[in-house]
Image (cartoon, rainbow, N blue to C red; front, side):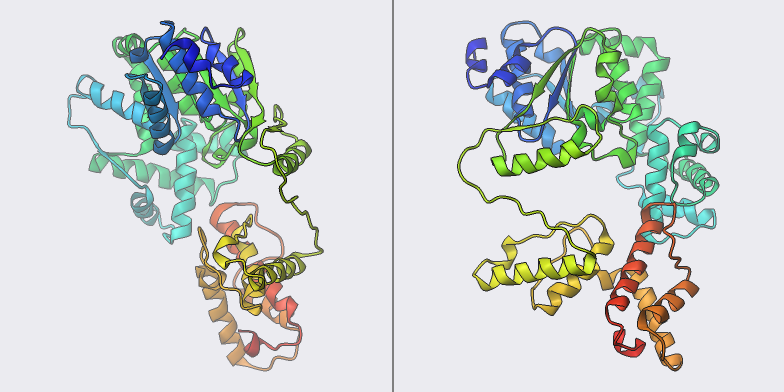
Length: 461
């Protein structure tokens, strides 16, 4: 394709991105604004004009699916030879290639999931190994590793002191040490190790670093708002002193901060690269004007710097979003369930209706209200409320209390008393993760009891 034909289908903003092919560039791109289209056309335009060599171009995304989509789009634009990979796959490819020069030993096995090793490490430290604890401990270890913190650093590093750990930080450090020892003995690397070992090799071996610099000159990084410290370090080593890097992101779409990612790298890009250009993509092709207006209102109310206000491109009438405010979760769940029941009665298929909620504990009121109205449900991404381990355990305790004696007090007070004896407190825990989820589930169970003061404990459970 010719440079002109590559640009022909782009809007003015996308064309500005595609033709900005010299030096550092940051693209702030809202949802549905065609950012993937813009950056793939930028690579294609730079290739067609001879400004960039596709064989020395690396495009980095965050998921294998996104990498496949970008690769397919480049192929459709007649561009071959560009490296399109995730951070992990790019680092793994380099690490495998250079491993004989780094180690001389057999390449370690990759650990697809930390869970089994973390559980074994936790058990060796005398810690619980239930699924929720192992999940949170895995997240704690991952956070420490992407910040390049050793177990010893966890009790002295300023960033570590500011973090809310799922368990006592000393226990996290002991588990982290045991986990790393276990991997070393069995010859395994996890995904964070791949990044860390690659960073270490590039830092310590100038010959390897020089070879990488010869292989790659131009860089594009998608979803830059979700880059973490070790990925940022790796990108810096890949590019060296060169500033031929284009990053794309939206601070309002940050979703991986719990793993150590930070939008600060996107926000500070023009401080890191003083001569960088900045382009905003704000024409939304995905949603109707009413949806875009509502999204803009929500984003405007946030304090996130550099957030974008989008413009809807789609025309035509659409139903206005309805915003309703209720006194409590009970009223909200009842109203939602009533509206859904009415839609189904009018002929709408239940499978075309979805409810999104912020935390797992909110499902209790919704499940109860929908069940009362005979609305069938299918849970995705979360267990049904009464199937959760902490709720089953609480119900078992309540059944024991129900069999034990008289029940003359208010139901809510009785349930509080039983669950308080099991460790529940009216004050939310400082910790997050499984500890917080357990508290929210038990609090939701107490909320259900408060809704039915007419019942006694045996009838409630």
